Amino acid sequence: MTDAYGALLAGLATRPGQPVLIAGGLSHGLYAAALAPALDSGPVTYFDTDPRRLEIAAGYGARVVTDLHDTAREQFPVTVDTSADPARLAGVLRATAPGGHCHSVGIYFGDVALPLMSMYMNAVTFTIGRPDITPHAPAVLELIRCGRVDPMPVYSQTLGLDELPEALVSPYQPNPWCCGRRRRRTGHGHRDAGRRPRPLRRQGAQCPPWCSGASRIASQTLTTDAPTLTRYRSPTFDCFS
Image (cartoon, rainbow, N blue to C red; front, side, top):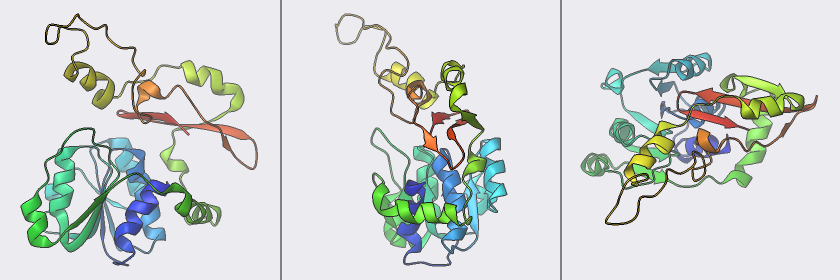
């Protein structure tokens, strides 16, 4: 949540009360939809194609759209990209108002084309980077404590520690953006430049932390009642927190 908080603050700090556009794709986008009203933003528009995430974002009061063309006549001074999708990132940058700010928390493992001419003509500021968790954690926790932000709708299950072993071995869906695509692009399982064929890697062995293939390692979230494990699952994201 601190990542989403920082992404919003990057634009809203100097543009309070302005409309916000969020490109969803990971849980960060839903957190941003929940946090934006608490940070005194203007109307929030959430762009995604996943039905469950759209429903959650709407529950936070955001207007939801499944196509950026639905916002073609609008421009947003503050935009947040959580999609990890180059095409959506480019669309969000074009939707950023002149003099606006776009921050991306979507992780891009390769080079990405940006609409630099559009950004140049509109003087758009674009930032990207790892989150500063420690500076923002007290503010985020206070928003949760006082009830201004409720992160629980994002999660699909809340489990007791006695249910942890079964949850960890239950079926999960691999992330096609990592396990599937990286396997094909990096040449696993076939000859490459005269080298001996490399075996297919075990799914999750080299995945980034947000990939479902690496989500067998869980951390505990302590509550005032009892230790719990919360699991969030969507077609492209499966993790424990």
